[in-house]
Length: 488
Ligand code: C5P
Ligand code: C5P
Image (cartoon, rainbow, N blue to C red; front, side, top):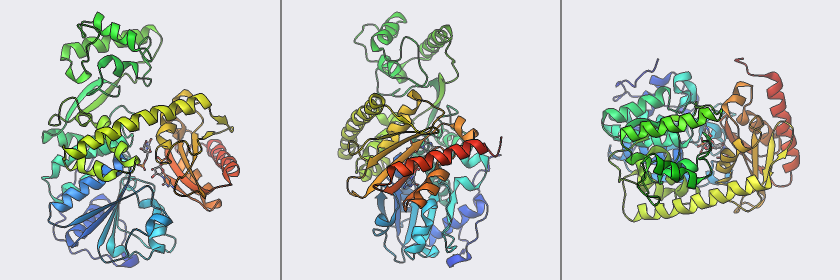
């Protein structure tokens, strides 16, 4: 059962003293969070540089600004010892969004008082070693209905509790959830994340549609949108834009081959016709149609034919800003800026897409090394450490999907470090794989740091120990598989 957020947080005098804060259930955690925010004079918001980080930061920043409390955003590639020095140990409230749950040790070491910290996250919780309990709303604490809710979803629930009229922010919550792949397995948002999307529908900010599970539905000419799809694989269409354009002509969706209509511009009968033709083609080729259709999240008030019109393209735009060192431009977009910053974001998006394409080609052409239970590739200094994880996620399906993929790379401004990104699929989680658990154990043994999710995790390790590290992670994953899933 989904518990909608209640309205009982008003002016509760909750005082958090050092280690005395005790974690409770969702409603209590939300109440604590809103009370902390309302008591603050000024807030520093520290977020991750990806789509969910920017969206979650922007949601809570707007909700707090609307209360008249000044905010200062700070984005970090990852919360680690070096980035902690940018976080002042003063009396202002520091809200960590899309990070923090796994780095409470660092907060404790830096002497941050729980009185001045609030964590809004969905990463696996790693308690601080001296036992300091930082106030936290974390979707991983509240059972299955919340499990597939990203940090942007958590921020939205807090924003809504701060003021029930904050429903316009549901759009960003959906962007963050989609950006963090919360709908990938099920082809739709589920649980509380779906409830948030419906909240946006009720207030007129979101339109939920059922359609083809492809990327670029608002901006890409339909034949390119279909030809670029490889999950699902569309026989005769995937990888073949010419055949896709011919199909559009045959169906009368294009009047001439130079037509550029997008999926979003199709009429309902055209959507139906196209879907059934593609489905027939898949069935005739023995392909499952299970992943052909998905729930799509559109934003009707955004400018037509822009990436801001739907959640997945919006998320890519935020990733493009954040992962290329301009997260504040992404935040400006989330705040509604559609002028200069938007043009800059469009430029970043073009660049991001072309480098991601290059990265994926590099991984596919070079191939991965099979270590037994995992497969890996070292991309050296060819690509920034902020994007290799995306390449790992996008290329895994072309390799052995039963072996988690690990990408190692250099860190440009930290020559003594190596960045690790790992990705796997839900089918492997059901067989016992937990990437974050493996990376935390291995990274700790090699004096590094790691964290993330069971399905997508990362680490930084000292340069020089890569081979031993790969061996160790391989061994840990093999053990996880041998032990199997606890829920099996
Ligand atoms: O949670 P975090 O934002 O730090 O995750 C970074 C990346 O991990 C996301 O951009 C997404 O590509 C991937 N991820 C995933 N599945 C999840 C959560 C995250 O593939 N359940
Ligand atoms: O960087 P990448 O996208 O591969 O990160 C995957 C996940 O691992 C993210 O959720 C990220 O926050 C987490 N991570 C972490 N500690 C690190 C590196 C990544 O918690 N040192």
